[in-house]
Image (cartoon, rainbow over the protein chains, first blue to last red):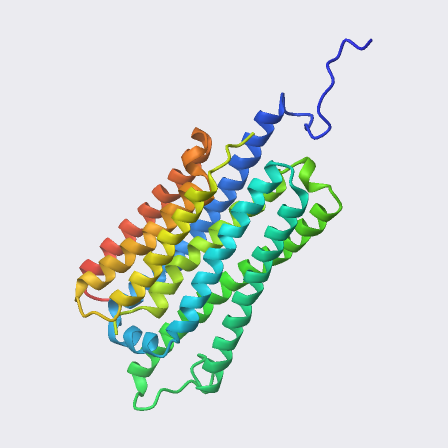
Length: 218
Length: 93
């Protein structure tokens, strides 16, 4: 008989028990999310400074946004977040198929979000509102045109960076769904929880992007 | 094992957030001057806090998680306060 107590197969060498490991994993993920919050906050700060300086240009830029599509985007991400929460809880209860379905729903809604954003970008390209060489707003020239261009530079930078995060999240969700299918994940629900935290963060960012870019007072 | 948040509570938070989104959109059609931005930010922050508390389960988490979340907000606050107090008081960019 061994005098060394048996350790759980999922317990890493440096931790005393699963609870300590789980708390360390959660803390590590939150520290990463804190760095992401700071990155997006710096961009929002840039937005705030220029909106304060060139409010009318930002008002005009926002008037060119399609609120319906923006609102649908926000709703899709919110619903996706809810689905992810249910996926985490299903994984905790070791319900393999439920976890798989909720992960697929979250992933599908994320893909739909990206599709709608792509259609918005296409509309802006067609209207010459992408801040490239042919950027043009009828009736505006010189400095006034550059201020409107600044709005769209910030829009494309921040929404694209967020979209990249959504795309990475979608890939991670797909990866999780496959792992769940081969029964690796239900034995250890932490990956679902950690990627869920990332997905919720991505949703939080868009809750600020939507009003800041789409809902400047009409 | 992390606590399970009751499904009705999650759905209630979700419905509240949807209402906040709709409210935010409707407010943008009203001409309330400076109050437009204040209400918009309030509703956006409401959604962010609800997602953090119930979806990310900060409400049910230990001190380490709350410390990490609070630290992020604190340092962001420092950046915003110092930067905006500079730009809004000097009259040029």
